[in-house]
Amino acid sequence: MSHDQHMIRAAAPVIGEDEIEAAVRVLRGGMVAQGPEVAAFEEEFSKIVDGRHCVAVNSGTSALHLSLVALGIGPGDEVIVPSFTFAATANAVRLAGATPVFVDIERDSFCLSPQAAEAAITPRTAAITPVHLYGHPAAMGAFTALAERHGLSIVEDAAQAHAAALDGTPVGAFGAAACFSFYPTKNMHSLEGGMVTTGDAAVARTLRLLRNQGMEQRYANEIVGFNVRMTDVAAAIGRGQLRSLPAWTRQRRANAAVLDAGLRGVVTPPVAEGAEHVYHQYTIRIGAESGKDRETVSLELLERGIGNAVYYPTPVHRLAAFRTGEKVLGHTAGELPETERAAAEALSVPVHPMLTPQELDRLTATVNEVVGDRA
Image 1: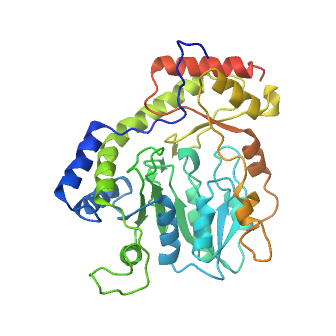
Image 2: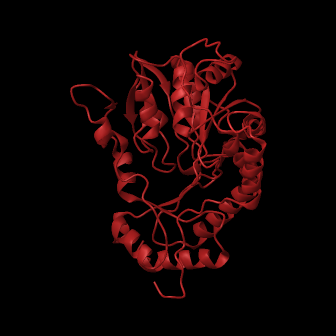
Image 3: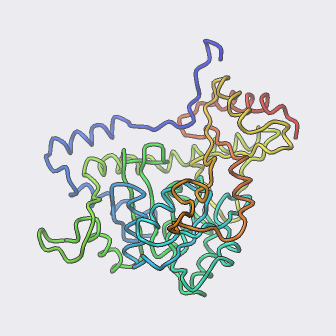
């Protein structure tokens, strides 16, 4: 990397003056635990999920965990999950006491395959957790039909897909519950935080009890609960980020369009018909046909100042935490060839809204040089 070239970061979390002022305002006000900012954030977030009930929590993982508990899913139950995802998707299933069943993904979208999910259903299956991976919505029409046919709950993992949509319906408005993350690298953040969305008022009330020690009124504990509240400081930051989300999403899509048009010798991410991709990641494939392996390309890009990342080099079903020992922590439903292929080929390059046109041009040219345009 020459001295006049800076590193183009793979992700660029934004904390603007508005968010800093909002956090200071809350800190000066003295009400910093779950309070009016959280309530306002929930109400405002509801507008991007078709008016559903929103329950803010301290992380996306907590959102997934609470959703399963609120839906009554636990020991003896199976939950169908992709293996090509972050471990939190399956961790939440285990934390609820249920068993994750790992199934394969679709090649194009990197999302859970409806056909593979259907083949994995057993009498113990209670729920399906499709992940809207990298910001591309999963095939929710097929999953909704599958869930209705078999009497299953759908819990959407929308941690990477704020404001994505399929056939005009936003992600977060399909399942019995849906879960968003506000970790700093996400399309919007609250430093740390999560949100559960649901169309069911009774489930929403249960979620509110579960996040706060099982009580709505102080010392009137109705059920056994957790302590996974969101702070008012986090909510104030999240509200500012939510206001910026539409413009950031437009910029991510514009950046992706430049990459789609300019990249050579790699497989750029296809978008399904009717899908509105929000490009949390722009994930290309470096296949054998390119003449180079993914690790070599990744290192060469880093040497030339192009940040990049591999999500996820080890599928969840092969992680030590989920290997079957004496106690069954999870099992795979058949072979997972597309999962293994994605784990070997996927490489995410910068697409975040802070990229300049010059950086996009440099990114495109550098990838083309490194891959060598051999496709």
